[in-house]
Every structure is written in C-alpha cells, then in structure tokens.
Length: 399
Ligand code: CTP
Image 1 (cartoon, rainbow, N blue to C red):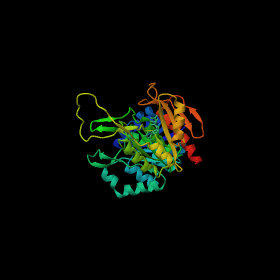
Image 2 (cartoon, helix red, strand yellow):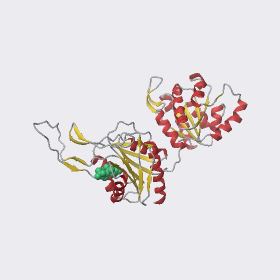
Image 3 (cartoon, rainbow, N blue to C red):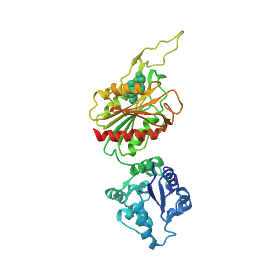
Image 4 (cartoon, rainbow, N blue to C red):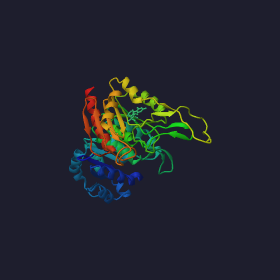
C-alpha cells in the first residue's frame, strides 16, 4: 500500500520513544521507505541501532554528523519525504518548529520539509496544558501541519490527564490517511457492519455469524481516503477503526434508525451489515420458561433498510452486499434492481472457508447499475474494501 512512499520519522527524547519502532515497523511492512532522524536526547532513550534495524536504513543523529552536513543531508531527506512524522513530539520540538528555530538536524529538516507533517505530542499533562505549548500547537496547525490530540490516561509522572502517547493503530491510521489519495475528502460515508440480534427474551436471540470484518475494513478504507466516516455496527468483537465515528446498535430496527438518520447528509451509504430478515413477533421482558413439548416461534419481517434508502435515493451513491448460497450473479442482479443500487458486491456464503462470514478473505463479484459484472480474484477483505471504494470514487464523479 505504501510502495514508493518515503516516510521520515523525527524522534525526540521522551519515554514514549520505546513505542515508536512498532509504528515504523508497520510502515515498513506496508512498503514505505522509512528514515529516522534522532535528536541527541532521543539517543539516550533508545539506541540508533534499534531504528536502523527496524527501518533497514542508516539513522541520522546529531551525534555523528557535524552541523555542516545538516545543510546537505536535511535538504535531500526533507525533499524526498512524502510524510514527516514527529513522534514523540516533545514540548521542546513543538516550540522550536513553531518558532522556526533550526539548531539541530531534526528542527532543520522540519523547516525544509515539503510534504505533510504529523506531530504526535506526548508529555506531562501540566506541560501539555501550558499556554505556550497550546499556542505552538495552534501555530503549527496554522502552518498546515497536523498535530494529533494525545490520549488521556496515566502519565510517566504518575499524573492522570491528557498527554499520553496514542495507540500505534491511531498514529498509523493518521499516517495512512496523510499518505493516501484524499479522493473522498469532504465526503460523508456511512457504512453498516456486523450482524443484528433479534431477541426473543433477554437471553435468547436470532442472529447470524457475521463478524463485521468486511464493514470495518470498508470504514477504515474510506477514512484512509479522508472521508468523514460513520460506522453503524451490530454486536462485534472488533476494535473500532481509528478516526471513525461508531454508532453501536443491536436490532434491525435500531440499525434502520441509525442508518437512515446518518444517511440524510451522506454522499455514500454502504450496507455491509448482515441484517436479520425476521424477528420474533414478541419480545418477552423475562426469560421464557421451558415447558413440556415443543415451542412455536412466530416471526415477523424486519424493515429492509437498503430498499428504503433506494426508494429515496437522491444523489447518494448506494452500495449493497449480497450474501448468496447459489445463483450468485442472478440473485445479486435482482437485488441491485429491486433496491435501486449503484453497486452490489455479491459473495458466496456457507460454502468455502475462504469466503463469507468470519473469513479474512472474500470472493466477490461486483455488479453495477450499468450492467457490468466484474469477478474479483480471491482477496483479503481489506483489498476488497479498496476495490469497492475505487468504484465508489468513480461513481461519485458521475453523479
Ligand atoms: N439489507 C438491509 N435490510 C434488511 C436485509 C438486508 O438493508 N432487512 C441489506 C444488506 O445489508 C445487504 C443487502 O440488503 O446490503 C442484501 O442483503 P441479503 O441478506 O443478501 O439479501 P436480502 O435482501 O435479505 O434477501 P435474501 O435474504 O432473500 O437473500
């Protein structure tokens, strides 16, 4: 995903520094060429050898390079970098960068950088709250850099408050977005995911084996492309994707309300949820006691959310999924028409282990309103998400 991209990591002396190699390893695994600049203080916390090993590139430190070399090397590095990520960003580097001071390798690089710059502040809560630090952060944002909000929690000082170095996943998501195509910037994308549960009583429900993986992958991919993303999710075990607003629901009726509410201002709605088609007619408020003999369950239909969206489509791009156990293309085509969709991703369920519920991969055939049918090869759900959103971007250009 990051082939051909160069990331320059500026590391400062802070206790959170020991977490940074994890981030850089992930960026490298995704194909990025990662270079590291360490301040002198940083080299006291983690050895340059660690970063050299993780990135596979020589590390730049003030210790080994005399100042006259900065002017040559910093220009080359700063010009090549698609993204400079400063992690952890101490109060000191924020202050120097905001003031335009260039007295070491990292601050010099930051003045020369032409690509995106992401600061990941981590410091004590009192320092973070200081007006000087807040002013510097505001100034850097004004200059066009992105400055992450630190997490709240227990800090190295023992205090509890804002200032914690964020989870690697959150920083990685910000890096991927800043390195991404930005082709959904300014667009609102609503994605539904997971199963719904239709309760018979407080301890029993009808549901299906959906894990939410496909919908979560779509939400993360839409955010990577800079969309404003809302994920309406039934019960799942998955961690929420960073930078995505998650609305948790349980039943089809709750999902309908949340999706229709969010769809009002949306440019794109993707229904990847496995919505239950029926619910027990009554929901008992207490556990139903077993009696001798069989039990008969009366089911009633739940609302078809996607069909309802299709009836009042407006200029929104509507994408559905079709879970089929047979006649994949015919059934999916019928659903595309009946629900007035722009695109439907049909996938076989309940047959092979490499596709459908709970699988990491998926076999998808894409059918579009214009009649085109594209059978995708076996892909991971992340790759399917990328392909579906490529099509969505093209569809948005058409409406
Ligand atoms: N869907 C929905 N509301 C429902 C049922 C389904 O919005 N009550 C959406 C799903 O999220 C999916 C699409 O409709 O995007 C097709 O779902 P699927 O379960 O494949 O088909 P159904 O329409 O339920 O038809 P059938 O169960 O007969 O295959």
